[in-house]
Amino acid sequence: MSVPLAIELRDLRKSFGKTEIIRGANLKVPHGQRFAIIGPNGAGKSTLFNLISGAFAPTSGEILLNGHNLAGLRPFEINRRGLSRSFQITNIFHRLSVFENLRCAVLYSLGYRYSFWQSLEKLADARERAENVLELIGLKRRSETPAGLLTYAEQRALEIGITVAGGAEVILLDEPTAGMSRSESDHAVELIRTVTEGKTLLMVEHDMSVVFGLADQIAVVVYGEVIACDTPERVRANAKVQEAYLGTPAEALDE
Image 1 (cartoon, rainbow, N blue to C red):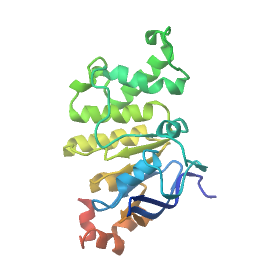
Image 2 (image 1 turned 120 degrees about the vertical axis):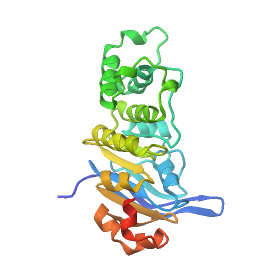
Image 3 (image 1 turned 60 degrees about the horizontal axis):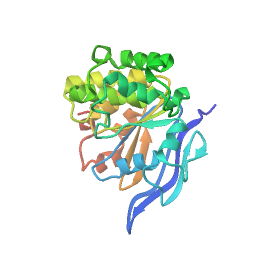
């Protein structure tokens, strides 16, 4: 019995002027799996993320979320259908506390809309969910700290927390360990594994130790096409993948 698909790309194409960046990409991401997208610089990985999350409109082809075509939907509409993403550059409210950042992230999913008369302090369910996420990402002791004063690794952890706080079932993480030390990266991997348990994860990541340690499946993008999509072991041994990495020996993909 086949697993339903969380994300499906069908002959997806994106051009900027006369330059075609995504050239007929096809990808199937089943529910509950952790997928990584890898590829050389300029392969189109970030463009794919921007297409899936609605930042860019495709030139042609289809993007399906839980079987529904996302054509014409804006990023916030896609988010409300159950997909949430992080960004390469940390995207948080620096002057708000860690807790306030997370509380903002949970409000819509709990049914709250803008109200001049409603006090946020009285929303017990929003507080409870924000506190649960604080515990999950290991920042409870930093709850009242302005987010801008967190360390870089803590800010990345907060952004991951914001990404999952709304309850989305499909999570996109764009280079979640970029700029981290090895110990920080190891901690981030465990955090990602924890917060995406039972969810669908699609991530772009350059650190191969993170990719091979976390992903169930790896999709390799080269010149805007998915040239391979398989288990980490099979991708590591794939001749096309080795060639895409400029002749790099297969074992070096672990580095």
